[in-house]
Length: 201
Image (cartoon, rainbow, N blue to C red; front, top):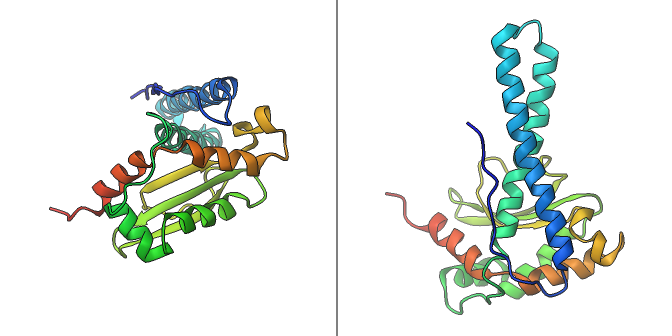
């Protein structure tokens, strides 16, 4: 099965240039293309002689996981910017959870900014642990090291240099992070949380 590149209806963003978004979307498209190409190679080599090509197959499997994570994380990222900026709903289920766990959305944002400021390329991610009934925040090195396994994502913030270097230079991560939260559509995050926190049937 080939994965299709998703299209996002993104408005012009405050503090993140159209050109930066264009290049970022092209990078995302590359992850989709590479994942599909590696999947085809794996199928081809395994069908010929999986023992003969064991080393190549192992390396392709490792690299394919990196491409998959890049593809999926960027889909989470861009979806959060569709529809324009939207503030979090007062009294909504997400707000209630954040009031309980972080003493409010503003405190969560402050904490996520700190997580996103960790040195090195990666992602600041807010997950939801349905089993424990609590959120977990973490920094994912590159895009595959440090995930909370099995936990779905509520919010994903890309802090690789490619996300901000065009607009702010190599040292402009903090300014970019501020811009991201200015443009965040909290409605997308709320929708994710509503689905994940609903009683299981």
